[in-house]
Image 1 (spheres, one colour):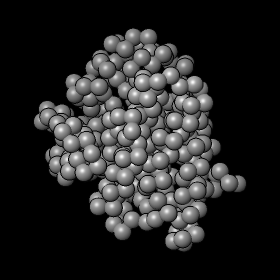
Image 2 (spheres, helix red, strand yellow; image 1 turned 135 degrees about the vertical axis):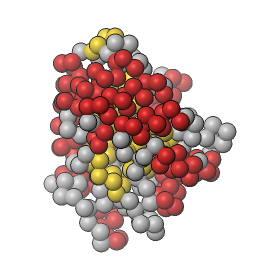
Image 3 (cartoon, helix red, strand yellow; image 1 turned 180 degrees about the vertical axis):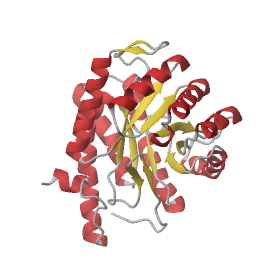
Image 4 (tube, one colour; image 1 turned 60 degrees about the horizontal axis):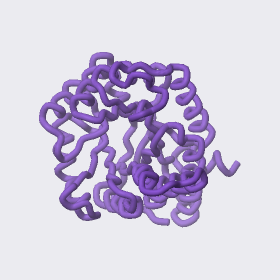
Length: 301
């Protein structure tokens, strides 16, 4: 394994720490709820959903989070402004972890930002996301809501390469700072099926140059693969775990692992990766994990 030469930032977001050297902290898990066509949502426009099933999902994910030593952030998705308040309020009341507000459009994200600002959830929220194309209206809404944490998406459609993703980071940081963001989580941006390997290398370079927390939604590649070819259940499990584990080996601090239902198999695989990385770091660099709840002490006991 390896350590980064650059000093690594660690951000505390609602008592969940994100960042650091490989093996220092557990990789944070981000699963999505109320996503497009989620079967627990009965009316995506008005925000009606099966509250019992939603609570069960959140509870089960919380249990496996505690079991594996993997902290979580709940990624609350939404496609309609009127629904976002209901989704955010429910997750905020049923959990005590950070919440990512993940709207499909600027209009939806702005509605989410205004709501969390009004009800005092700003310190607990991660804005998902700021891109090189985020407009002034959205930045103003983030600033007015006093949201201090955001995912910065290294989206470069003109040059979707390793270097292309790295090229936009300085601009992203400047844009985010205009919105009052202080805690930056950089998403290396999975856009296509082959991307998890490339994106894992981008994560390495981000951390080596900037020392900032970095990660990716590698599950996006699995979704695209499923659209291209039929995968049986075992193949889906293998694809999902491989996509999420590869960035961890390259130093990722968070993974957006897809639908919250995937917690049943993704958490344990990623916890094993964390434990093995940490043990290697202990052997080579004599650095122990910063927390007694690290997967190293949960998985091998």
